[in-house]
Structures are given as structure tokens and as C-alpha cells.
Image (cartoon, rainbow, N blue to C red; front, side, top):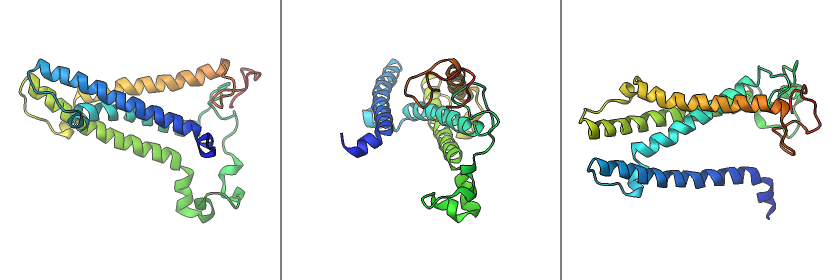
Length: 219
């Protein structure tokens, strides 16, 4: 295996799995969507046409929205909150790390650390900011795709006039779609936080060492 693959094996594996499942998602969604269209006597969509449909766009961004909200919230909350005994928590009593401050900069530290000022302020919070921005973009994608899909369904079922994105935002349908995903994401993270107190995974940085006591907080 080339060195660059070994050094990036985790991200390569995760992104490859993402692409495989996204393609499968689109294929199965395409068939399911066309089955629904046939029930109403409408012509089926070609695959490429389905990729730009509200049905596909809504289903993709609806899930991305919840994932990135969970990740952004988790990154931000773990900066301030602790969980006794969890490997997912920073150690109790640790509020700040000396390495987070400019005075501890090294020659190879990122450029914003040496620049200081606003660039450093933004860089200090860049991970959560980036995740929240992706969440916001996914929220908009869900809203626009959901509006198109809602209008399509309404037209097929009752011939109702289309609604705007603002109107769809105020429907219970939109928030039902969001909440069913948001709650599951935070449940999964909460389960990881609590299970990591008493359970272990050999070799994983998400777990405490196998020999560590349950009361040990942080990885």
C-alpha cells in the first residue's frame, strides 16, 4: 500500500463508503420514486433526471442536516461540558489547554496562530463554525428539495397549487422530517458518551484504554 494511502486510510475508507452508499441511495430512491409515479399514472423519470428531483435532493440534505448539526453541537458542547468517566469528555477540571493559546505557538503552528487578531479568533473556533455552515447549507438544501417534493406530491394527489419555500418551512411536514433525524443523532452521541464510561474498544481513540478504571474521564 502506498504511504499516502496508509497515512489517510481512515478518511479514504469513510469517504469511499459515503460514495458507495450515496450511489446505492440514489438507485433505490430512483426505483422507489418511479414506483410511486406509476401508481399515479405518471411517466417514470430517467436516472439523471431523478438526481435533480426534489425527492432525491430532500432525502440527501435532510440527513446531512441532522448529521452536521449533531457534529457541530458535539464539538461546541465538549468545549464546555464534561461527563464523568466518559472517554468522549475532556478531563474534569480542565477548562483550557495551554496549547490553545498563542503564547505556546511553535514555528510549525498554523499561520493564523502567528498572525493573531481576528484570524486567530476565527481559527480558534473554525471547526465548529465550518460544521455549522455545512449544517446551514444542508438545511437550505433540505428546504428547497423538500418544497419541490411537497409540491409534486400535492399536485399528484389533489392538484393543489404549489407553495413557496417559506410556506413549506412553516408546515409541520418540514419540521417532522427534521426532528425525526435530529433526535436520533443526539441519541446516538449520548449513547456513545455514556457507553464509553464502562465499555472499551481495543485500539480505538474513541475508547479509554482497556485497563483504565471506569472513573477515568477523557481518552
